[in-house]
Image (cartoon, rainbow, N blue to C red; front, side):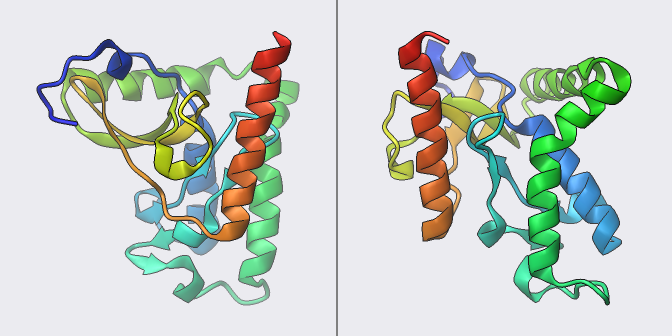
Length: 184
């Protein structure tokens, strides 16, 4: 989509899985002993129980996670299992401990606003209608990586995913579609 586009649909999006992705990057960076800026991985789908980590597209400092040196005493599969569970439960854990999670979402909103006001063109997994290349229909709104600039969603990116991750995305989309159709 050209940068000069001002279609209203570019301006309408939600925080999606930005916070979940940020929490994952922070925790994974700590585990691998690298700065979170060097952790490139996304949580996509519904912001909730059916969200998932796209491990097949994960990179650490330009190196595929599958090739990155994992700390001794743990396997990549163990890390993936641990963080998949942690990512889904993190918000609830914070809510139980603190009584709210308003600081995290406030930070996300500030980052999104800054990216718009400064035309930063940062990539965030915001809630947006799915590109047809995701194969879940164009009426489904999911947390998916998008370039956020002065026009809002400048462009949605199609994140490479394996067959298992595609099934998870379809399940997440189906869950959201059922909730929408039931009115809940």
